[in-house]
Length: 131
Image (cartoon, rainbow, N blue to C red; front, side):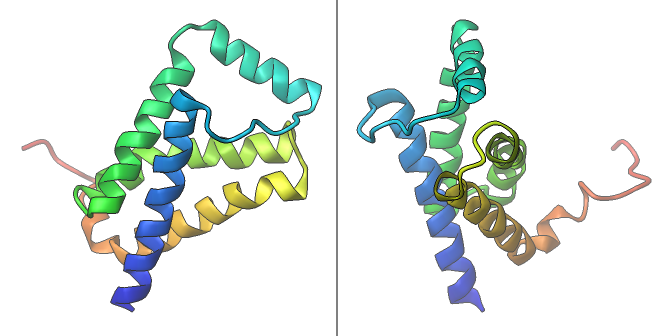
């Protein structure tokens, strides 16, 4: 099971590291997107900071997953990114060929979080008390 967790962690890290870097260097061709998806990306780009922030987050968290450091923190930070990728593909760009990587990321993220489930105990405490 440890090897499966390692493979899943590295695959998830590669996905975010590579696609995060692509946001800066554009080495992968952009897919054709429906009008609503293009408008969404246009709005994010118009902020002047948000896409850069998301891509930098993807690179840093992907790297953390690849090297195996602060994995629960990286998973926690990436969770809303993964959720937005999946929702983007459900509502704005519902093409099966483009959606696969988002759903693979979701499944890998859930599996890796399950592998590290003992590390999330404090975060999931219902009645947590301050120190």
